[in-house]
Image (cartoon, rainbow, N blue to C red; front, side, top):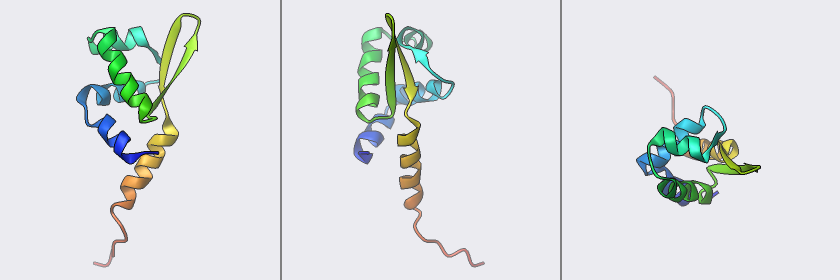
Length: 92
């Protein structure tokens, strides 16, 4: 997992919107472009960034491409972010 790639991918509003939509489950490229109101070319650019960061993966079925969240990478990111808190003394 490359934290730099993940954080760079998540720095964009459109890519965060894609991640939020994918929380609902698997979706086709066409449905995703329609939901976001962007061209297939623009969507392809954003999906490539998310795939490079390993935040999503694609599956193909007949003539369709579907995208889903890669939950294992998201879990690793959460663990890494949580580690930034470090050891904290919880004494009052």
